[in-house]
Image (cartoon, rainbow, N blue to C red):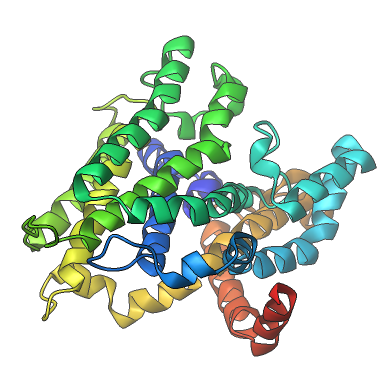
Length: 378
């Protein structure tokens, strides 16, 4: 996702651009993963019921506990880069626009505004949409936890259908069946506002979160109620990964021409959920032998995984600092891909990684920050 937002400044090949800018497809996996983790931590294994901590915690408190898992860092980064965001907004639209965009960003409501979802720290529209899903989960998870496997499969079908129909409508009405939207400029879009509704609106994010929760519950009920548990295998884990990579590459080569939105809903998310379920089954075996699961649990990838969230939050503002014309002209005399050359993109990646590490060590794991969050939550 980091590369997808700023790879153009490295002057990549046309193929690399088409492959790496498919972030509209890949981002759905993070919503599904969020739902999967939420179901795993709040419902009972091998039982059709929710965890008592979910049932007995008032919904507002439960929601705030989840939101405060990511809001403090979001808030800090907005504060640190607020002068840059305000300078840019005031230059283009005046102080009222800067105030409006700031309110959207700080309250994490920007995803509800399809043409302004990427105000200030653009990638954090994801947190805006995720927050709505978090607000729904304490009501949805107990109901999903009560369902049997046949009922969960039925829920998965209707959720899939609810997410697919609006995307079919977008493609049909705008003749967008084969567009590679992530590699297109906004001006080339057939209907940018409608596309952005599909891309940003929290209702569609909620569907993917709930699909993740349903997938998790299907695994958690393995071997119950007389239904034989599927066998874990390395093939079951690897094949969905191969499929996800293949569809990204096929679209980049132009072999497969399917809209970002349809690729995400019909191919990528189902394959990703199959991967999660297979990896889950492989990881709970008495002895983990699946090579892909063992790789994912390696020290290096676990360390990088710990940096994933601060990388996500900070890469957008740093990219604006170095590449956004109005800011870079003022600070550096021009965007740094022009001043320094395309090679600076790799320096940018290093700066993002170091900044994420600093935030992780000084803020995210800071006990005082955790204590303050707990005091606010009561």
